[in-house]
Image (cartoon, rainbow, N blue to C red; front, side, top):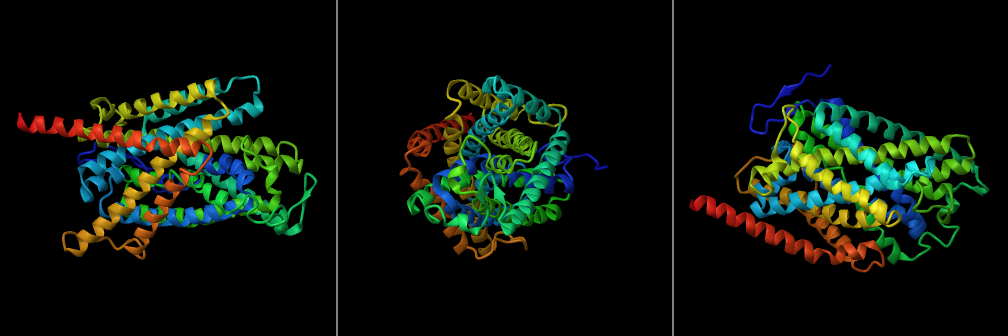
Length: 463
């Protein structure tokens, strides 16, 4: 039984997350609906070349996680990158990164709620998607408001289901590929990587356009850093958790997409169904499709769960500095930042509305806008690590032994890659273009918000 200890320093959070839960939160963050649902539509769009997109984004995610690890070992904090940006870049950077992260999770939650509705629709086709989405949101909100220990326990079991499912899929898929199994009239094998229009059937350009969606698929890997403030013995537990995320990215993501591309010709996949469900349904084994549907439903619920958890802590970090409404910084008697959780839940209700108005487009629009938040968060973590390294070289602080490999060159390369992802969004024909052209509006809102916050601070100091 893991004991519950209340933190004595400043943040008032309960140190209720043990090694078992943090390890699974880290894994769970690395397996989400971007893979379980999004990969189907992207495979249909780009073909087998999607594997390269996952590999490239995986390399970027690796360096982001190592940068996060170095920062966390320097100072574990539930404010995570908001705290680090404020300390190493400037107060404005904490404000911007915090609200961009909230935008990420607000949009991600909408995508996940949409995914929940799509999965349940397979079993209950007569129930409107918005009703399913509303029920799911209500349950997860209740879990997050009760206690961090309950969140950690639920996330632990969500992650266990996801990891077991991925392992079963990987083992089964390898067997099917090596035996050249017949899957619904087609033969599994390496030939499917090139036999239907080549490895780049839609061209290299389309393959590059999938980078934005793949970046979204990797979102939530940073939740383990936010959990640092509520983790017992964080400096010992977190390096193991972060290292674990890194190799799982390669196995779970790149491995899964590679095997999916070999199991079936890419045109068989589509955005309306999980590619894992597609494969198992075509195998003709009774009930397997339903089992996989239950698993991917778990993945979507898990991601929503993480979104409510992480934004609650980030919004409180902003509210503590007067950079968010006071309400979002409020804690209840169970040491849960209920104000931030409720604030994010309001945004998730927008997902319910979108499912009512445009059920088919809701997922793509939400993931495209969420990707901007992911890029901003990753860039903040990498640049904060670079500034911390510079401070260490000046003798202002001591770097932890767990460090970003290849710094600062790997940091600059990662920032360049993230910039490329954003630029490519402007050349898209779909929802990504909507997200790209929303950037000026987002910049204006953030600039005005920071100006108002700064004026309020100056007035308070003057008084």
